[in-house]
Length: 471
Image 1: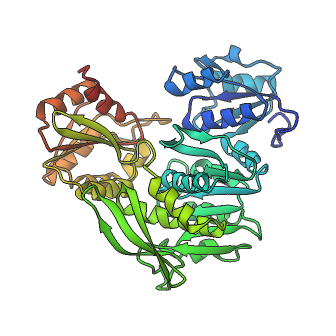
Image 2: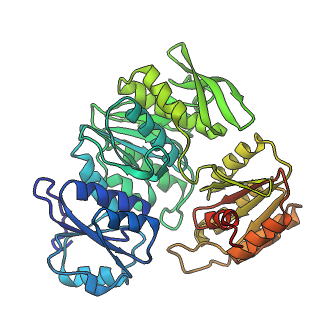
Image 3: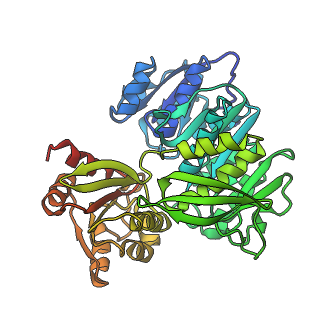
């Protein structure tokens, strides 16, 4: 910022706000919320996409290509994400003009101040699904929430919902400590594991950030935390507000009973769970429409939030049982020549294991996994864990690592991962070209096989290629 203090948006007067990277899943949603609040919103992105086209349809100007001339002195504030480097021409222009600027996390935090109840869902994994589940419950209960999610929710047809000013629901990402700029009244911590080690020093550093996040909550607030997080009292110690625990098996890391748990879990042929939610000695049945054990845990967190808000149990149950998943979360894409194509955002070994567990509960002949590693740092840090997590597939295919913001390869590659998988007996091959991967699958997959495209990059395009019939 020009004056080294956080610029505060005036939600009564509005203003001219420019988003650098407006086509991102979160940034686009925030832009739409501000536009609805009466701000003059515009921004830039590298390429045209369905998201930028949607913004343009809503009257928001999008510049393609990030250029210095897009930045003008009359802009009241510029919003950046962590992905914007200091050599970005728009970033340089903002600094040269001395314009007010804030990051995405600061913007979300300022928005939260305008709502009576602000719910922030954090964790290394499960943020998007849990945020989506909570959103479905609030919508079903008629509470008209405003939502900014990290994934597209099928029932909303997008990642953003503009509602009233009582309830705000947001995914809270720990990367670059952006969630420490939030002002939640209800916080959720799904899990705490090693990730984003291009920013954090180690697991202790990550745990400290989650502790700081929990301590943002006011005295009359609430923390909902997974009791299986190791030594979670380090996070909750001296917390001003009350906290509620949940765990699938009903026992926390200290051997104590958690407030919410699941009993009598059974799975149908599609891998979707039927179970009893147990709390305070009472039981209620739940039938999920999304597959996987991890969704049982996500559901428990959503129910804990719902109960704390005083939502009717039948409304809560209906919202959760109507939930059909967020895009790229074990998403059924279609069938081709008798084999099934599923896409999943899993890009961390723990997430891959959860996705593989979900797949194991589905009937198939042979499992093909197309995995695109995401960032060199994560690939190097979890190299052995990736090999172990992927070893359950019948065949693994990998394109190049999706570099995202990174330029240093750190000596790791998709080919190296494939070589390691082959050494332990899992067939794996490196195919850098998406179209060649699509052709290979079309030539080799037979009726009854399951193909999962996996990763936080662009591997989902491979399934789309096959289903389009253009390869």
